[in-house]
Length: 136
Image (cartoon, rainbow, N blue to C red):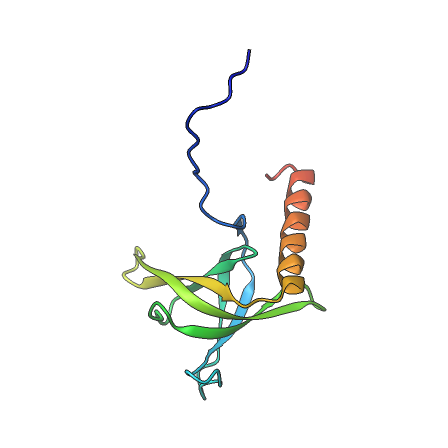
């Protein structure tokens, strides 16, 4: 006999699943008017991706929480997703060689639903691909 639970605890607090994936990420800072800041363009990589944001990695600099960016993430040679994003969290990891690794959690802001669906479909395809190769 199965009983209905009396207390339900939500463990997953994210709206979208995150998937570990390394992709190139191009970004540039934007000012308070939404204009690009000259000379702020940079290229880094993602550590994970979701329909709501991404975790990017940098060896060079740590951006403060709240920093707004314009990002471009190529899902394929023909498909690039672009969005406004904001640094939602940061973490610094010390590496064995004494250098630092800066992890920055991005939250997409005002992303068009069509782009969000492209990301989710892309991630679902990656999951199926890895499962078919016995890697998941």
